[in-house]
Amino acid sequence: MEFTQFGATGIEVSRIALGTWAMGGRLWGGTNVEDAIQAACEALEMGITTIDTAPAYGFGLSEKIVAEAIRRSGVPRERVVIATKAGLDWDKDGNTFRNSKPERIRKEIEDSLRYLNTDYIDIYQIHWPDPDTPIEQTAATMKELYDEGKIRAIGVSNYNVEQMETWRKVAPLHSNQPKLNLFNRQALEEVIPYCRENNIAVLAYSPLARGLLTGKFDEDAAFPEGDTRAKDPDFTGERFKRNLRIIAELKKLAESCSKTLAQLAVRWVLDQPGVTIALWGARRPGQIQEAAGAVDWELTPEQLSKIDEIFEKTV
Ligand SMILES: NC(=O)c1ccc[n+]([C@@H]2O[C@H](COP(=O)([O-])OP(=O)(O)OC[C@H]3O[C@@H](n4cnc5c(N)ncnc54)[C@H](OP(=O)(O)O)[C@@H]3O)[C@@H](O)[C@H]2O)c1
Image (cartoon, rainbow, N blue to C red; front, side):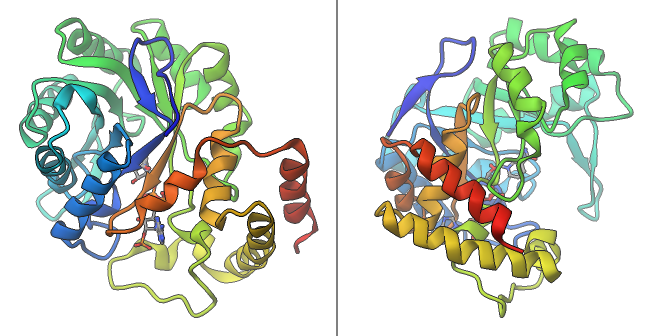
């Protein structure tokens, strides 16, 4: 596994972290808890030390799965870097909405500490910017948690440059978590360069485009009820068909590097300047092992150009 320093903090992280959104089941067509625990144990066994979760992933279920996997694996708590989040709320019907008010964050951290069976969070992130709460208020609350020793790093997710600038007038900002994969590169335009200039760590999410970049889907792809990939623009209509044509070409390139498509796709994320961590989502036994082939090599400039050429030429 590759390890690195987490931005301006003294925290050492594995460059591939386990992503646990799908383990919560919600928006992914349900979950198998035992399979998910085993998948998380496999990540820890193969040397992945960093795990990203959130209360919104199954309304606490993902965090409980992470805690159980750490317990079963026998890896000491202090060797695991737990990243979780605050700032999403939900009603009694399970509809989520943004809420980064101080009282919501104070409640969420206590719930997360309980579910994760720990007395501190390594990386605590605001999940989505909340237009109804001044960023300064949210940032000040996160700074209080940091000063109290409840969290070791202050992070945000899905924040743009302006929002990060506002934040940093009030509190330190150690990380941001944007979406980044071969099909979705918007974060490379402004967010990641800004983070790089300011030594803010970047955790890139959906590096496999929710599984599309494993190459396991074809035009007949079907999803269980409640799996929102059925409506995801990457998986629907003409865009999906073009994505599949691109994937066919990328697979050939991956084979020429003796890699799988998923390994090539995640390596591409890791090789983008400014990216600290790629969050590899896995929820079934046997999935995370493939991540071992994404570390300890780099794409050459020729391979990077070839990837861009495939995107340019595919209509
Ligand atoms: N901050 C945010 O707003 C935000 C948003 C999204 C994600 N995230 C974080 O980023 C993490 C990763 O993103 P993601 O979960 O959206 O997607 P991802 O990592 O791009 O893809 C994950 C999915 O791909 C499939 N997969 C993974 N490895 C595989 C393998 N070896 N073989 C076959 N299929 C495999 C699995 O789904 P199936 O088995 O069901 O096909 C898995 O759930 C999340 O878990 C979460 O921690 C954060």
